[in-house]
Image (cartoon, rainbow, N blue to C red; front, side, top):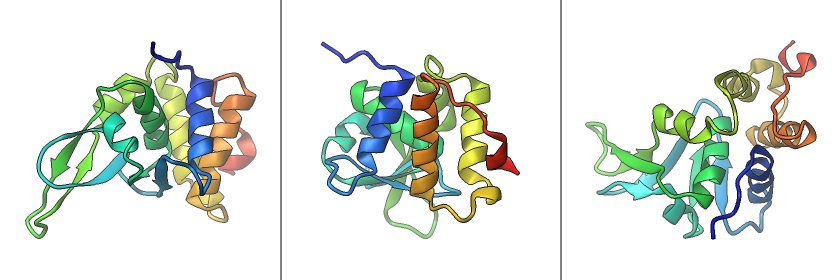
Length: 153
């Protein structure tokens, strides 16, 4: 039986994954694609990948999508080759990310999360601390990311 997923459980998972001893490894990075994994060859299911204990790079929204994907298969990383690399990074596109998260966060919330995560107003905070703040905000507000004015000054 699949676990019921809510915005709060997604945020709780991300907070757990930020701990050093977590079996799921996420690396928050600013100015990053949503979810990026090392990839050679075929597409990879994000759920299966996360369960291997290998790390993936995520932005603010990508971390939420990874937490969703951990409980539901269907988010696929596709290879992204450039002319200089023999290896590809796998990434999940924005359409797939937004579709997966739509039942939990509306477009305004996702845009606000992304602005908070990338904002220069928060430059004294690490990417991991920004992600912690986002998840704590979602939990504190019962599953809704609420814009806090001082974070955007």
